[in-house]
Image (cartoon, rainbow, N blue to C red; front, side, top):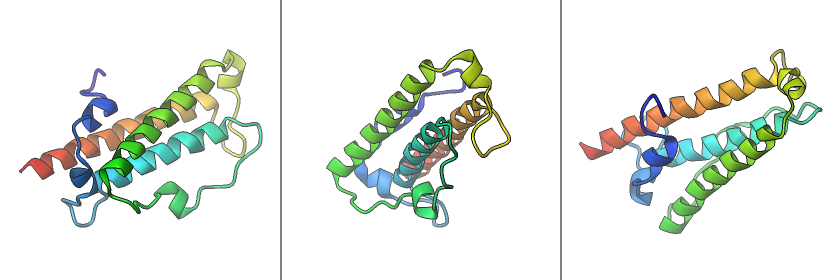
Length: 137
C-alpha cells in the first residue's frame, strides 16, 4: 500500500487481548472495527444487486463482539479476509457498463461506491494502527 501497511499487515500481530481492549474509553476496539469492516464489505456486495437492499441496522453496521477467545479473534480476522476476497471476486466480474451503473436506491454509481469502501477500509485501518500504538504505550 502506498499510504502505509496494508490492513492485513496491521492486523497480523494483534492478539485477541489487544483486539478486545478499549484504550480510548469512548472509541471502538480493534475487534469492533474488524466486525464493522467485515459488515461493510458484505453490505457493499449486497448493493451490487439490481434491487436496493434495506439499510443496515445499527447492529449490522457495528456487529457486537460476543466472544473474545483467541479462536473467535482468528475467526473474525478470517471473516474479514473472506469478505474482502468475496467482494473482490464479484467486482472482478463486473463489466465497464456495470461499474458505471447507478447503485439501486442511491445517487451514485458502482465505481464511486467501490472507491468509498476502499477509503472506508483505509480510514479504519488507520484507526486500528493508532489503537495498536496506544496499546503499546
